[in-house]
Length: 318
Ligand code: BDR
Ligand code: CA
Image 1 (cartoon, rainbow, N blue to C red):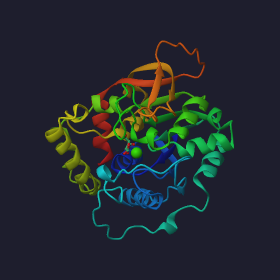
Image 2: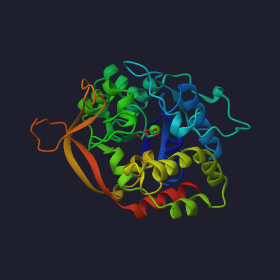
Image 3: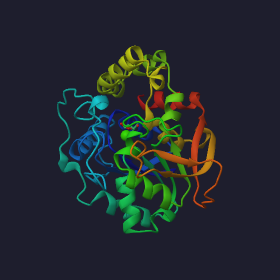
């Protein structure tokens, strides 16, 4: 069994990543920590509880973490995820916030990792604020993790919220900088362009969503808003990153954590984040030629097994 901590800013693809982990027989989720991002922190917490309710797994502990980036104000994710982060659909019988743990997410992360040093994988699919706070509180935190899987950043300087910035890194560049420079455990990164390059066909999307289950019904509802956005970008703007189908970003990082064979090629390189550029703040920078000679390298995922990915997605809604 693989032990997992999941840190999310629960929008639609985070929800899907959580469902993928819940459905995997080889995974035990020790906790889900929440970070502001796609929507405000309170909505993120509510969204995680809604996902757990649909999957009948409300016993999994959920913790509230950071409500804002280390510096500056949050970036708006509503254009894609809806104002509430899950497509603004009616929510009868939503679980109450009394289901949340009292302990702060960052304190919980440190405690849980201390209980099982070297055994836990951390999957992070939102801004990296909680992770950065954790390593600042306890610099030995990364050493006690087995590995970390991050959805975020970019390799070709293409942004999705600023010219060069991907949402998770550009929302809290300082936090991303701290994590990429101070996390010494094996670190896998599923970048924005990697996820776009491995988008799925709309035929697959419909096959996936048309499974006759409560989870598929829930997923179809919460995804409707973002699917409309993706399709209109593809049809009207010709945005080259959105030209080929359905992209579910956070699920790629989760698939890598669940199944080692999912990643078929990764580039080992030191990575960091630009903090000062007037156009490039929040952009991930990869030292491909190793000019900086930094010891701390990450695995930037370059190729994956898409058949495996589809299997994991299908299983998530069974
Ligand atoms: C990332 O931004 C968020 O909106 C998604 O949930 C994903 O984590 C993609 O850039
Ligand atoms: Ca996310």
